[in-house]
Image (cartoon, rainbow, N blue to C red; front, side, top):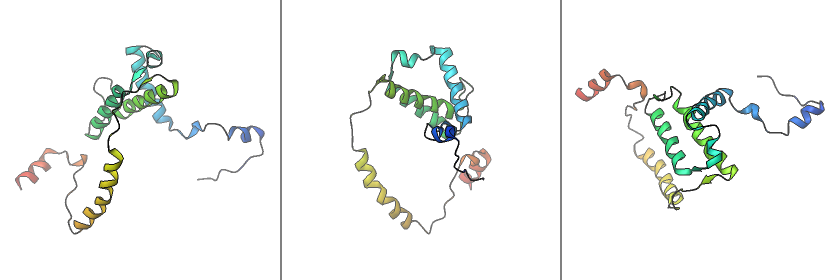
Length: 155
């Protein structure tokens, strides 16, 4: 990769202190744009800005798309779009609503999340140390072949 060298061009000097849009992967921008097109066709352009959004609705939708993707369903059957792009659109709507003052913030009352993380995190090292001599099979999406699963269960 070639090194980016400083320039004496006045436009370069001014432009280098502006938002670095070029760092956002255009593949993601294109995919999220398609998810927004679907929303535009179903609900109307910028409806989320006009009427506002409930945090819980978009949080739930985002998680549904991420969970579906993580469970091996790459494409949303309703739209034909990647669940990743649909989740990205949900996050973009939440971020936009926050910035535009259009978020109906119905998140849960604060619980003990931070305390739970602080409690469990040190346990990870202890568990890894306790089971360091084990070498179990860690299954992934590559193991979805039913014959492999049958062999393991019957073996």
